[in-house]
Length: 364
Image (tube, rainbow, N blue to C red; front, top):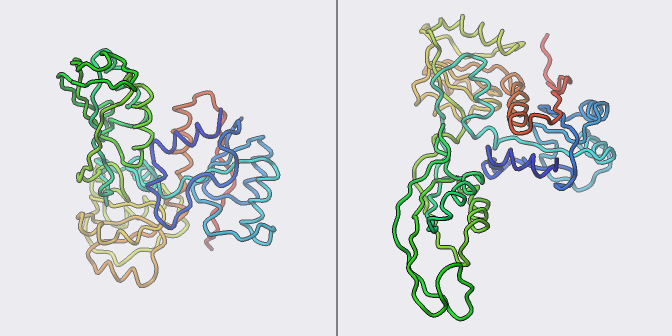
């Protein structure tokens, strides 16, 4: 298949526009129109991972962490990043990185962490604001169904766990075609009345261009009447971190032991034990210290994440137990997410999970 098809699958679930301003998610090397025979999925890209892709004859590496994170003024092989880029280009291997845009969706990185811990009733901890639009368009009754389907397939009509969502109202539209027009119905110079359906649906603002393109390509009219309205509702299925509850409350040390085993964590750094049961849990894969206040406000008993700095542990202020399980440990299951997403859409596509342990931290 074409590389751009794979990029499109990721962009529809986790629009690259959702990535943080400091991030560099997206295509790192390669031509979007190149044919892909198989893909290797990893967390980080090292030279060992590129060699693994070569051995597997995979011409695409899909990573969570971008290999190019800061600007490059030259590529001469003087550091690990430049060596990886040179090696990949030499072997005609494309690199696609899906980072913070996949952190910022409910079914993303934190969802796998929550799943491994065994959490239920998941909710986004810090929902993205001002990220939704309402699309209203008018279409003749004869074409309402195919146009709706095209709009849905482009990413419109998704509300939480439901898709193909729309509201439809029958009415009459009027118009008069000018001398320069090529009307689908009606006559030039005469007002025409057409039975039409007003369709309303919701869409992420990041997908507006592709949804509108799908509408225009399918709609039979020469001039399509549509409106886009900003929606101030919180996008409860997009944002950073998650909260969930354990099936049964646990003692703090029992919960920490569960984390150590299920996440295969070499070390868990944590704040002072508060001597209370753990029931509600906040999680954030990767570096989640910026969500500490949100975790406290959510009423969570513990916040599970990685990369807490020394002074940030003081910020917990005995209001919540912080469990730093490690950056890699909290994101290691992202490979499974990428695999599940692609295999669902392309069941016969050859996919491999990297066997290279790229965690740069070792424990004694």
